[in-house]
Amino acid sequence: MSEAERLFMNYEVMQKEVRLLRHQLENFVGITEEEMIDTMVFGGQSDEPRVSMTKRHDRTETIALSFREKTAAANRELYQFLSDRYLKLIQDLAFFETAIKQLPEELSTFVVDLVVEGESWDNLMVKYHISRSSITRWKKRAIKELDAIYQLKQQQLADYLLS
Image: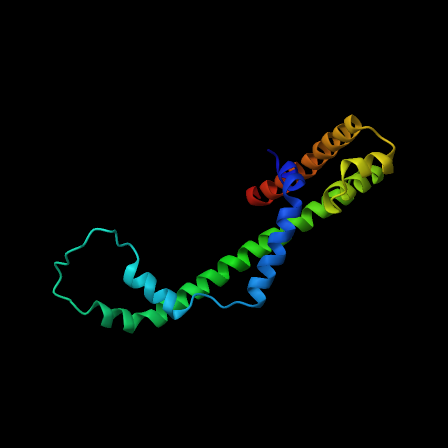
């Protein structure tokens, strides 16, 4: 599946994910100290009892001394992960929307209606006075032209990296 097809098919889901990520970042809580302690105490244990051969029997004390640092580090990593994912989605969607604007006007309007606005095929048939098979042809044509735009983007990146 090409990048254009992937965005064609997942645009609405990606928009929802952007909204959810924005909310998570704006209202970031992170991992609680209790969750971190549970992870440190119970993480990696199986149902079978384990025998420790170490001289150190003060695991609780060790956990108590390090859990705040580990919690802070885990929260920084989680926030960074959410931020990176959010920025990637924003960039992908922005480029896709820009690429749509580069299509011929009628095809661009069609793709906006189909993908961005989420119009049904029945509404598109009425609006553009076309059949279902024509919608399929227009969609394939749009994907083909968008693929060419994405190939140009990849070529520009390759040219930069090789220069």
